[in-house]
Length: 109
Length: 112
Image 1 (cartoon, rainbow over the protein chains, first blue to last red):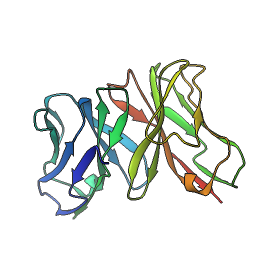
Image 2: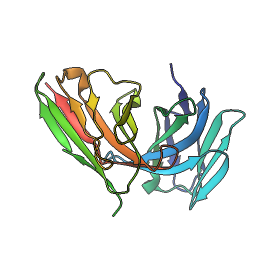
Image 3: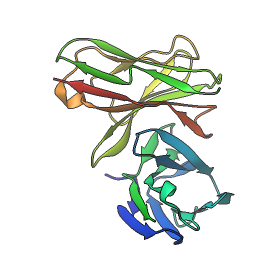
Image 4: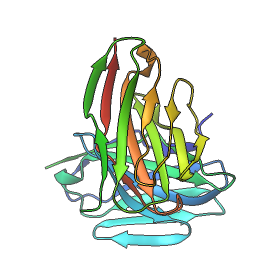
């Protein structure tokens, strides 16, 4: 069973393009997270959302609780944005944390 | 600097030889957790802890033990490692579990 589904699995973009990564989940949640994992393996927390929209620099994250869907947008993409982006949710019936399998983004100069 | 420190970064061991991966955080976070990451399966939660002396199973707890005797430390113990526990392991902490997470740098474990 996959509590969290992400699409696309892989994404290649030209530098400067607008990028969208989608996340759908099937469980009740208290929060949704977007994580970034660089080729070296380290994981960084980008956003935590429970409603609405958040923006940090060129990154924007939105969530629609009714539709159980979130999107991560990257404006004016850059090669340094190349990484795996992971959607994760905190279940609201316990304290478990479920992850999507990630979206591998490559931005070509 | 606020951080989660995992050790070791890399470990190769043999089947059945007990090992411990340490995790320490300096942010006074109450929530700590362990994950494994495998190709095609993504990250999966092994155990988590809401506070000192409080631990709970995640999705894949079999073959692992944890303890939370102090707030800052949350070691992962493999009493009798097997090759199917070869994986990349991450520790993370959060103020309460429903806030942003800080991840450790990861431990790449190989069991032969």
